[in-house]
Image (cartoon, rainbow, N blue to C red; front, side, top):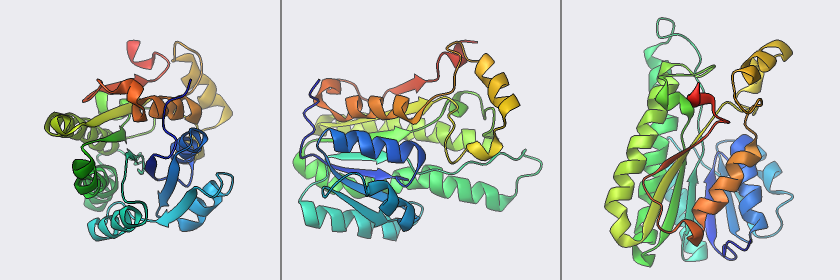
Amino acid sequence: MDFGLKGKVALVTGAGSGFGSAVATALAEEGCVLYLADINLAAAEQAKRSLGENAQAVAMDVGNAAEVGNGIGWIAERQGRIDILVNNAGILKVGSIIDSSNEDWEEVCRVNLSGVFYCSKAVLPFMLKQRSGKIINIASISAFKGGGVFGNALYGTTKAGVIALTKGFARELGPFGINVNSIAPGLADTGMTNRYFNDENRRQISQTIPMGRLATTGDIAKLVVFLASDASGYITGETITVDGGYLTR
């Protein structure tokens, strides 16, 4: 299926690994002009090597509003437009509330929640001018449970905030032709989570999922392509759960 994304300008945050790298690859395969943003520029450079000349790595700390504004302004100056923003960058906190510090709270909020706000606000001048755009936020099923198998209450709270931002942005931006949706992945074996896995708990966790396996980065990337395309033109303000049925338990 041709999703009509050839030539569209897309920015993916946290694109150096995990979901972000897979999303960037999927969008590149659809012909997008890709900007891979990551706080770790070396990781973004590595991720873009197989994507061809239409991909560019960008150093960006999404929790720094000035850095986000400068980076997105630079992209828009080069391309004249920004069509797709995928807010994927995030960090995981796993400690209990008792063991979590104020600094833990401030860090996870800065990246997971403020980062989505800063990036979304920064692309708006360009999308409003175009009267079109797609903003896709990566949330988590932790948002529905106040945490998860690994993610703690701090993490789950920020992801619930991402869902609320998605609803609010969608309501306000719909009249301007801008779609805003989020995806809530189930537990996946990525660079952010794999340090917590071993053979035993991976098996145990998989048994709690009706489909019998963890999410893959490809499961998420395919949905991002759909939400970035005109095929999803009448979908906005939604959070789509991709968890193999985990929340049905």
